[in-house]
Image (cartoon, rainbow, N blue to C red; front, side, top):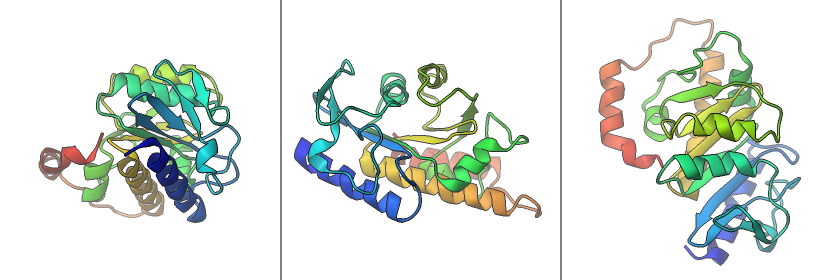
Amino acid sequence: MNETKLREEMARLCKSLFDRGYSVGSAGNVSAALEDGFLITPTNSSLGSLDPARISKVDRHWRHVAGDPPSKELFLHAAYYESRPGTGAVVHLHSTYATALSCLDDVDETDCVPPLTPYVVMRVGRVRRVPYVKPGDPKAGDLVRALEGRHAAVLLANHGPVVAGKDLASAVYAAEELEETAKLVVMLRSLPTRLLTEAQVAELEASFANLRG
């Protein structure tokens, strides 16, 4: 996809996320890889009203080269591109249920989204929660790099989800799947719940690993 089309696709998908409540105000940021750099939503912008021409562009060394100034969370995106081969896009949201899950005190930080459905296994995989740092702190990027590319998605503690995909559509779909599964986790917390077995998870991972970046 050329840069012009990718800018238009980013604006379209971001508006879809915003319109359905996955992002509010100026929360969240989205990026996608180009041959000569990366596109990323501008700082303090609403995902619901992006001008494709003003989406920020940075080069392969993360230097701003076009469009409005990039999101202050650029380092989070850079950490995924640098540590997880095959990453073509990154989506960071403050979606309600995934953010709620990031705040709970009793989740397993090494596997905080249980395998309730095959789709979360197929599109998202095992989700790690990383420790809290203040928004805009480059240490969050260091926490992602420390995972050495083992997780396509993380929850930033008390902050929200970050999801990588092989391309922009895949990353958006995975972020949506993560949010919907987090909603199920919160809804089912007080109820007896049947999870997929380890064998079922392994079968899905073997069959559908190509859906993730």
